[in-house]
Length: 115
Image 1 (cartoon, helix red, strand yellow):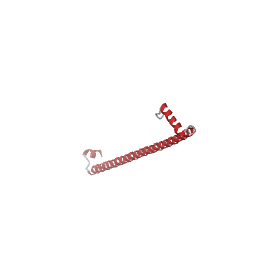
Image 2 (cartoon, helix red, strand yellow; image 1 turned 180 degrees about the horizontal axis):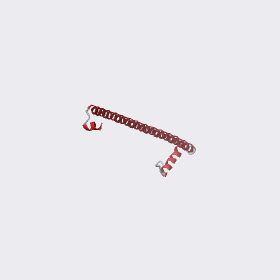
Image 3 (cartoon, rainbow, N blue to C red; image 1 turned 120 degrees about the vertical axis):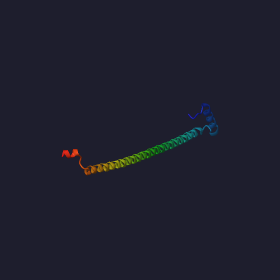
Image 4 (cartoon, helix red, strand yellow; image 1 turned 90 degrees about the vertical axis):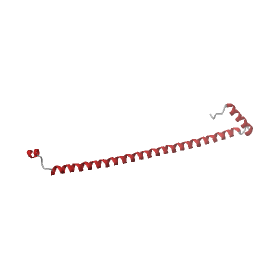
């Protein structure tokens, strides 16, 4: 589990028996187990918090990208609308000039014969 072999565990237990004594060894082992459990829970809690922060940052980045894309699309539509408006205005002016020149020209022979 932690990369500790059976021989190393046996050595730790032997040293623990010598230092702590056989009467207090179970209490000490239980205390160390609870301590490792608390540390493990804290590490998992910190990992979860970091993961949530990273997810939140990802969501913020996606939101920024969406806003940028929306702004770019809006600008492109405005430019296209302005260009189309200018083209329509130019076409309207050309049509007015053509219509006014038709009215001022004298009728041709074919037009006179039709009437």
